[in-house]
Length: 290
Image (cartoon, rainbow, N blue to C red; front, side):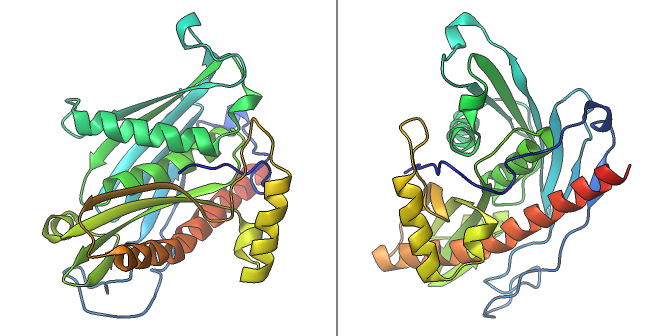
């Protein structure tokens, strides 16, 4: 269920001065998003609050883009290298070859790590404009520093920030969020203990742009129709807040329960999207001042 919009005005042009990649830039978390309050959780959040986000960029000087991203105690380091020369067996004539390496805390590769790497690769291929770099290779390395729940969502959010830090052109901003269900409670951004107690859980990844986020539902529907007519064969169309990934574990009670979980995740993802945009705008403003 991957679709790609052919044109996004946001982040079409990113600055990547080579001399500035070595300067680490840190951003403190924004205030926690507040939604409808329900019951309290062990860390003091309500069911529909997500954990504070924080990231630092430019930490790895030999990478084209690097980010350390944290959602409370879940933390990942993501690096981007490329476009690079590609081996003949990996060469794709009309677009870049995407390689994703996922490394767990233990360092021992498992089938679960391979699955996560493949899911991240599919999302990256949908977000990046790979047709701009034919016959090349782009490598994404995700190193897990600490896992306290919602690991795949944190890895996807960290990957998006690293892509923007690298200066590669993207179709929009990808945001990811996990949600767990337990005794008819919908728990956003669950911790590891909450994931273990959940009867069902899901991780969603969305692709959106700021122009569509600021429009009403009616204008968003019109924009979706326009983008569909402007799509090409090489870049299929994507609606605003199009779903890039929907991965579920366990069993939801019915279709309505799943759709409600998706709606909650979509609403909360706008907070993450706003955080990413504001953080990158601050970074660019700081780079231009130096």
